[in-house]
Length: 192
Image (cartoon, rainbow, N blue to C red; front, side, top):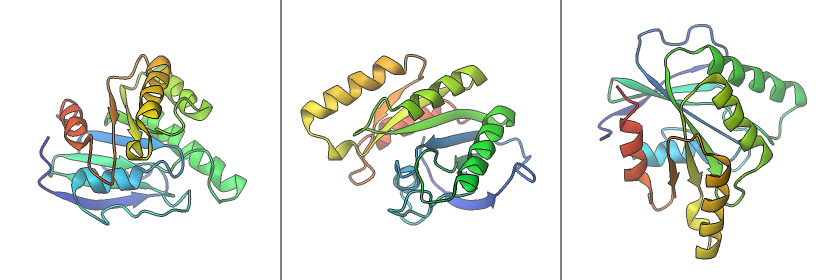
């Protein structure tokens, strides 16, 4: 996939009013602060396209980005730790669950996993949930550049052992762009 245009489209706080134009949606999901927004910026080669923060829980809405005028990248709120109240965290969980279960336009879910913490319970639960829903998913190991070589091998083995149904696993660094071409190649298979 060659990204020639990437624009913020709209944010939604509920499933009401989501786009109904039939474009496929590639959805990015992961724990709070795993690097979803940074990955989107890197992937689209557009610094600041998706707002980033070092504070977990920055993304609080379903954010749509129109890619090449023919598909959407969708940035979902993170799950797990975030500096928000219990009620708001529960609300995000329901929103995420309802979206994944009910949204027909989803072509692929890209689960971002922090390479420094592969195989966390919440990530395994998300994989099981995606399997249960029958959603095709791939895994991106983020923050790959922060690992030493021995840690990289261990992280890869760990995620491979618990992600047997993943369509792909890509190692990714938003800082260097390592893994970008490989991920775009994988996403292209689901962009039609």
